[in-house]
Length: 213
Image: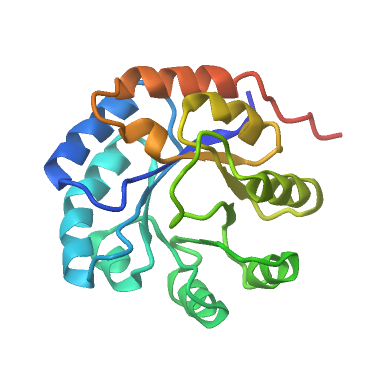
């Protein structure tokens, strides 16, 4: 069935061995399309050290490993792609360097015009939702409206960031986004990661895409 797929975002700070173990449990719960290794405060050396361990785990699970904001670490670690959102020029450079062999994603634009301009670079997806904001229980209204607008009008796939509970997958999936992102909802202390991913996939099954005519 063709429906939204899960896009996991790591916590901004983590113990690499602990996260690797949690990722293995996550994949035991079912389908995951991508995992974004999100370390905004770390330098290239630290990002690459984490990616060297996490990328094989993610790829073994059948997902694409994406590194946030660091093209060097992404390239050296064998990641499947990079997520770049610092500037339009950075996005253009990443597209030139990584495609077509690897994925380039972007997001975080404030204006609809900017989202369209960034998509014109040929990126593989547009991410709706602010990665650097504390997550609330529900997805942000601007995330939902932006993803709904994009999914209806444009061919470039989009990702909608849900809130910090699994229940918000419904509202994010209802936008028609190709991918629904979960961050804090998966990594809470004592969370049963396998069950969360299993339940997330069950929820997403209820949002099939319309059949193309």
